Length: 105
Image (cartoon, rainbow, N blue to C red; front, side, top):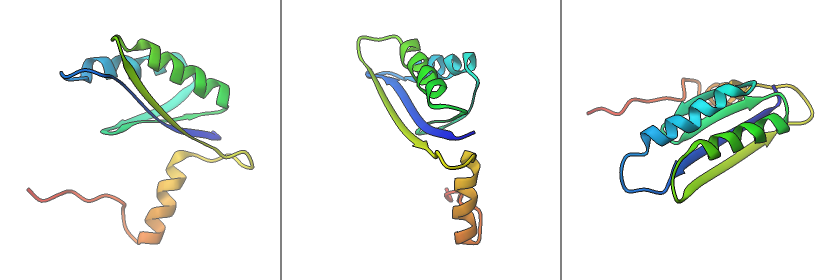
């Protein structure tokens, strides 16, 4: 896969956005993409930019509301194939450890 993006789609509302965000994530299932949702958005991987844009548009349109906010950040590496995990692996190699820490409560 060569195109990686961070997608965040949310209705502009006061109450919980979870059900609407779930609609946006579910819309991605109609496309040939891989994705992983985290607290700040969904990382999407696609073979080409057209597929990525189509998936992002479907996610945006899946959310109901008078106002929807969508942020799309794209890394379109055109010189070689890569996967999103490679970016995390590179940071972890530099850290010498996993790039994750649980907060003590």
